[in-house]
Image 1 (tube, rainbow, N blue to C red):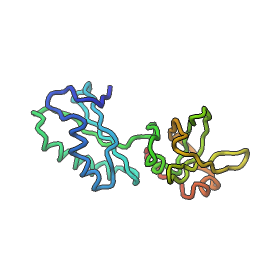
Image 2 (image 1 turned 30 degrees about the vertical axis):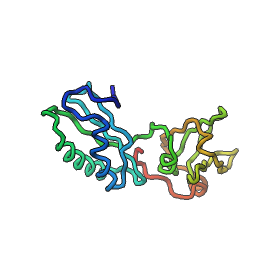
Image 3 (image 1 turned 135 degrees about the vertical axis):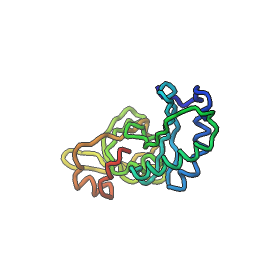
Image 4 (image 1 turned 180 degrees about the vertical axis):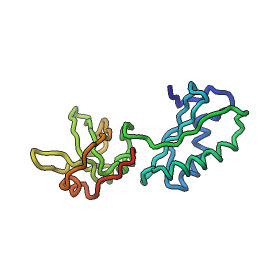
Length: 182
């Protein structure tokens, strides 16, 4: 079980303390801390730092952020309380809730539920001024729909096993995103 609330393991910092300690260092590398999660039932307890940025979080970035996070967390007096540190990306199952999430997922296939009860699946195009472009299938062709972010109740990236068509890529204005797991 993962918890956002104060850690119940003696000596460990709180999620808020971890975020405050690491935020500036992560920002220097172009990432922000999306969340800090504690699994206090793991042995030893696990601190999971979720980082996101405009550049996909690759293995090299995870390794460097982990080293720096570990060094900074070593400066906190934990009273010798052991813990495991994990740095990772939000993953594809994270709902897109902010303009930056839509911008970072450009080119990815998404399932969207609108406030009017309509559902659609399409490929994310550019996001600007509170509006996202989504390429959707219309018969045998594709069309671009412009949706105000305020009209979107829920949006989630879909896992794909085959590449998108050239027409879809042209309509979203770019190449297929790297498979980064983000």
